[in-house]
Length: 196
Image (cartoon, one colour):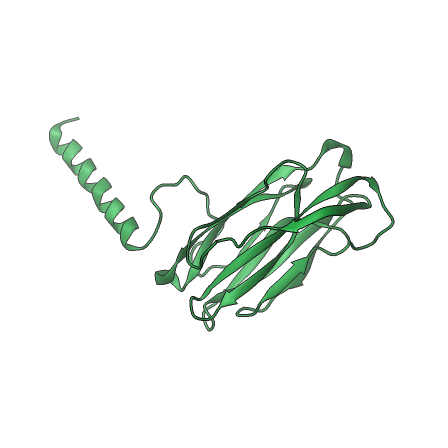
């Protein structure tokens, strides 16, 4: 490769870096986003897996929207396959929302639709139940992101905890949401409670 080709390649790389920086995109983070700006998405974990990590990146220039990525993990072997899966409650854009999977379900997917009129999204969780296992030792995470418009990241703190739902607030000034995820352990045995 001659020096003219090297200079051309370097010039293109520098141009791409400037374009990415201008539009608020993170440099090559290796993330595989499930959506583009202002686009709806439907993400479901593979059968028998549940969500264990959620990450988002905000851009005021792109409709005060976030790009999202999710990671899944197989549930404990002794649980077997999910006995039932369903789409749970939906929220309305611009409103606060609190949702816990009904019937002792765990979050195994997320779908969302963007609305230009309010610069916000509607949300819905895909929930799966495993036998008649019940949640216990539940708690809420701190705000994710800690401050509006920051990058948000939530990773299950240790194996054995699972996402059951979330509580989210919307700032009409910042046009952004903060999330508190509801994490629980699940019993190793079937229990009598339908929703706990």
